[in-house]
Amino acid sequence: MKIAIIGGGAIGLLFANYLSQSHSVTVYTRTEEQAARLNHDGLNFMRNGEVQTKTITAKKLANNVEGAQLVIVTVKQYQLSDVYSSIQYCKQPLLFLQNGYGHIEFLKKLASPSLFVGVVEHGALKHDSHTVEHTGVGKTKLAVFRGNESELPFRHESIELFPFEVYEDYHSMLLEKLIVNAVINPLTAILGVPNGELVTNAAYAKLMDTYFQELASILHIDNPGQALEYVKAVCRGTSENRSSMLKDLEHGRQTEIEAILGYVLSQAKQNGQEHRLIDFLYTMIKGKEQKEG
Amino acid sequence: MKIAIIGGGAIGLLFANYLSQSHSVTVYTRTEEQAARLNHDGLNFMRNGEVQTKTITAKKLANNVEGAQLVIVTVKQYQLSDVYSSIQYCKQPLLFLQNGYGHIEFLKKLASPSLFVGVVEHGALKHDSHTVEHTGVGKTKLAVFRGNESELPFRHESIELFPFEVYEDYHSMLLEKLIVNAVINPLTAILGVPNGELVTNAAYAKLMDTYFQELASILHIDNPGQALEYVKAVCRGTSENRSSMLKDLEHGRQTEIEAILGYVLSQAKQNGQEHRLIDFLYTMIKGKEQKEG
Image (cartoon, rainbow over the protein chains, first blue to last red):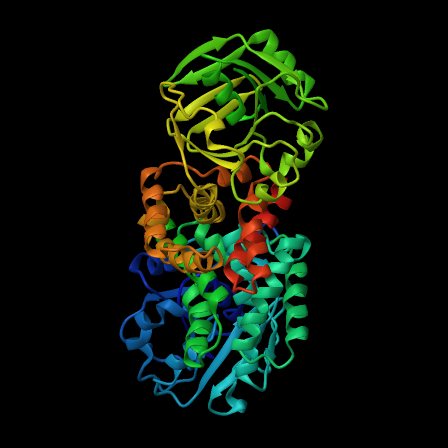
């Protein structure tokens, strides 16, 4: 299959590496420089300290993505407006791999009859413009947003170290990830701690509980006790990891706070729900972004 | 006058330096080591890069403080219980220089007919067990808690660079400092920023406003708008300073969070008032103390 991957970030390059094993992949980048580098020097893929270099096709993203049978959009949610003109009239199937829930409104504006969403649970780290490291093997969850489930890409694909899992309901799939992100990302980013401390430090655990209650009622979570246990299990399972939001702040990069808590706040305000703690954390992160950026 | 100063921290040593100009001062320390060091090597006093060494009398604090005409208690609020046995039956006038408001309950248990409270607005930094730096000249505010105003110490004292100011009402005097401490200390400690950023960073300024509203209603502040302006003026006037709570956390020391937000929370709970944000910040600081300490 001819696949277009929009975005040369960690997720875009990770997908390019694994999908190019049995597909014809083109990576569409924001800059001419990155495309030239990828075309000229190839894609360096690192895992467990080993590096493989792979020939790859890359182009600077122009106003449309020609010839692809599937377009995978890997840019951050806050960058979606930058790629809108390239995909708004696309008739091909599109797969979106953003965090949060805010991009669902964006999807409604697109012309394609086949829209899919995914949640990436791999760890990936971009070292430079043409080098990506697979830091943690997870899976990619997929669900239909618009169109037929039979068209869902990769449903029968089997790639070693890069599994896919199909979900019936995109809403609950995105919500599950949103909850995890909405708890772990802002708290670890403000407290400056790895994920595990949210459960091992008694005060932080209490903090997480209180904060989670506010979140759960805004997002109408069916079984809050179970959802909180899931979040805690993720903290334990990734106890040494520093969350992406913490790393973004440490490196002076924009965070995904809008995609995550920005969406939760918009829901709370729409429904007149209590959101003091979420607003407090949201504003702290916005302040840190101003400062670091 | 014979003055006993209990506590060999920054404030205790600062007071020892200035008061020994015209009084006979003895410093009571927690450890034998510090007393020996002060007696043997003298007190090093630093200001504007210059050092003066002064002969001084120091003793390890025992079960009572003999012979003093005035006892000044300079230990942190959370250390008051450690010195209780030394002062509970004291009949001499006692002056307490703690932050916050929580020590007022402690004072009620004491026998002395003359109890005074003070608020220290000097900057002082203890470099080692017998060296203190006067980093910022401010003043010491004084008020009567129990007894006659005519007995208030230092009301007619004039010491260069070390002024005193008498307040009619100890409650409003302590409250004013409490508000400043309750806003600036926890916010700067969590955000890891100098005081000035609370007003120059737009998101932090918004955070401070929201948080201040909760605080003002718990503490029944008469004129909240004016009080907030005062807090902002302190932020501007000390814009490069890192707050004591931020420094305590950075150095793995216990903070004064109990004396400050612990007291505010106890008031809120007693009166059934909203305290979500204050509890959130309080718990963050407790978690950081667990971690750093």
